[in-house]
Picture 1 (cartoon, rainbow, N blue to C red):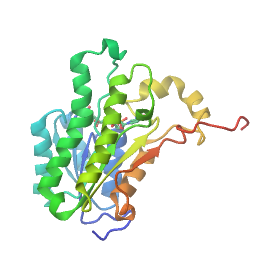
Picture 2: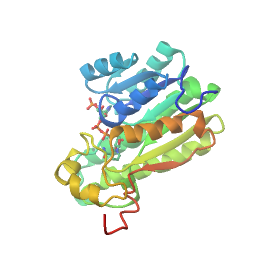
Picture 3: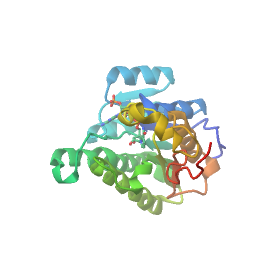
Length: 253
Ligand SMILES: NC(=O)c1ccc[n+]([C@@H]2O[C@H](COP(=O)([O-])OP(=O)(O)OC[C@H]3O[C@@H](n4cnc5c(N)ncnc54)[C@H](OP(=O)(O)O)[C@@H]3O)[C@@H](O)[C@H]2O)c1
């Protein structure tokens, strides 16, 4: 691996949930840096459109479907002959209510999509390419995994598990493969619209950096972690949250 930050020419990447929001920005950033990208999401039209825009390839399907996960990594390997970067971005965050009322299927879905799929994809990437040639895996977690919140118990618990999975895999897959996570704060995407649309002004006012995140803020952090500039970083979680975790400590503007 010889590329520096911002130069991923010659690399190939799989990005899940890449048709909108953070995943789309990540796929765009990787492609702009020269990587060939293989994208996935459930909506086939959106997958076709995104793949065409990025001059990449795509496969429609759910990361909850184990066949889709194998076919996705196979597609990357057959289209580009390699699989250097895996970004596990797709996630589910359904309204769950309290954990005492959590439906078993909804709970299982959170863990299938948010935890098991990243593991299975990492297994396919490892056996298909990375074990022999090295690589970088980035899991998209959440700043919220570090604390509790109303109605997000299954999501938060699954993302906390993904943080632990990241560290466990980092321990298992080195030295050739680095495994890290990025934990966004509130970002302007569809998934989080129910939070930022009604409350953006107040939320932004409480943040040290004075604004909510844009998908590109997260994408640049992922790009850096994927690159050789982060070559001595594994098992790390990079908070990209505008200071959410420290809160604003100054009372006057
Ligand atoms: N936005 C935030 O404030 C925020 C904060 C912290 C963490 N995050 C994390 O950031 C990541 C991206 O979230 P986002 O806000 O960008 O979400 P988003 O705007 O809703 O986009 C989600 C993407 O994932 C795809 N997707 C959803 N479920 C899928 C499934 N089962 N299989 C395959 N693809 C699926 C969607 O396309 P289809 O619907 O067509 O499948 C879409 O491309 C997630 O891991 C989320 O937990 C977001």
